[in-house]
Length: 201
Image (cartoon, rainbow, N blue to C red; front, side):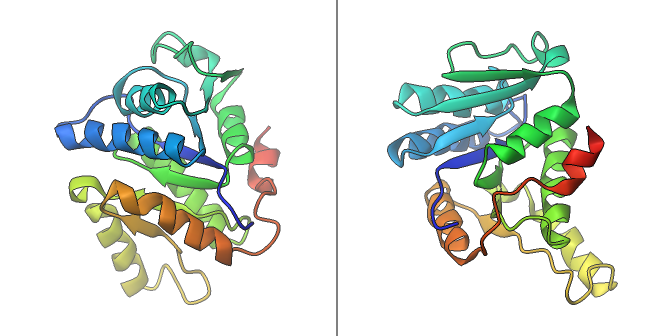
């Protein structure tokens, strides 16, 4: 995989406590549009999800939303995107997010964001895919997770040969260059579906 054409962004359906979170989402959406990178995201119009999708669209970019049917009303599905896929459940949503994306970015978010992020980290750790995974560490949001990963290494639950290759960027302008650099080093086959997803369906 030598280029990034689509990026899946995991992020909160709320705005969070800091205005910098929304500012980062808006800036990242603009960056995707300017770099002709299609945004793949959870399909909502609220919180950081809505901010990044609307910004991508407002700057002339392309957006694919993937939302389970039961969240259409709760997360106020964004109808103006070029492509909206409604799935029957969360497993199908995550499978399609994986298949549609060349890389993954985690903006600040809650338990759902963390769950989606950690699943991609796990598959990468186990060699099921080699797509870049990046933490957008806005205002140090992901520092507790980074510290926990370090603790897991110290206590030998992340052992040699099972390292977690997580990227990190404090500034929005560093995200796309770091994804591209990582993608250029990734082996062939990174676009294949993670088998764990297939078995859940």
